[in-house]
Length: 395
Image (cartoon, rainbow, N blue to C red; front, side, top):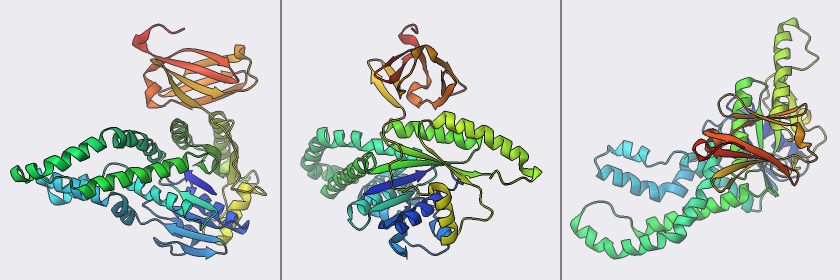
């Protein structure tokens, strides 16, 4: 079983590469479904056919689905949303505003992601390809189950028992909406579903995230931030898909400046994401729409490779807490530590130089206000220590 999630900034071509990958997998004999969790569905446009909220057969071994956001919300969040909306309305909020406010930020995207677990566990497919909404931030929500599980195990039983005792008395003195037993059941079901999803997408033997980008400065910087958070939340990234490179065969002088710019940003992509493999896709001479064009893209991307291959194993970077400090850990075998040079880049970047090799790392928010307090090399890993400025001098 393989789950491959494509994410990246809007407009970089992740829907096209998702569809192309799915087509290639199907033609290799895998039972494959490609699904879109993006509310602005465009998967059907890539295949140049209509795709609905239920899986639709596209070709031999290939199905496609554009997930129905409203249905998923009702299924996973409906009972909780109804209670919150009633509570907000009781406090005087307009009914329509109360209904909108009762949806937690990111819950819509997370509810649509839960369909992935169902498809993966259904036994109907060998490969699930996911065209993600254009943000890596959605995946940060997958850290929620850890906190929610603690709440369910530690506090939830006492709250549920207390409400069972207090509910008859409270109903006699207030008209405030009170949580009924079915609400507690719904919360337990929601956390259980979230845990299933988290176990699935954080299992590196099953799930891989692939970042799609273009050789453009803003796109690369956003991809670097997404990559940092994917590592932070234990989501394995096994490849970078660099799309829309102007082919060397294009000799028109009009494109000379563009080609020079792209060459510069190709180096930036290497610096940012090494040692991940980088698949480079040319800019085609026509839009990528329809099976023929998708097959062409798949061939240009993977050539003779099987897209279900796990192209990189292990973490390219990791952040761990060490007392009051944090360690940024980079696997770097056979490193001569005397060659290491560190300096802070602009805003939230750390630049690591090792001889002629350079790596730009977007720091997570937890490290932005901290200073580099030293580095050491051990067990084939470079450990960079970050310390709060008030916690002592750097070493």
